[in-house]
Image (cartoon, rainbow, N blue to C red):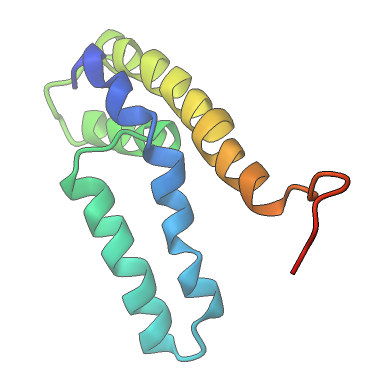
Length: 109
């Protein structure tokens, strides 16, 4: 784990939203397929997500991975900040742009 993973933590919340198609799929196979691809892309691109790290890092420590508690927190703090920025700014702006009320006096055709 590197402390410089914060840039990869910023787009992580937007990638998590990519599992939304699994909610609308009707069959079990459709749900699995809709969830599998975005999650595999998430890990293949090396994105960091604070909630995932809260499970993976301690689990690795229990399995004797060469990661100390200090190294984990040195990674966890910037990743959490990056996730907050990504969730508030990128995802928040996308939702605002999608669902905002039209400006007064704007004509809708």
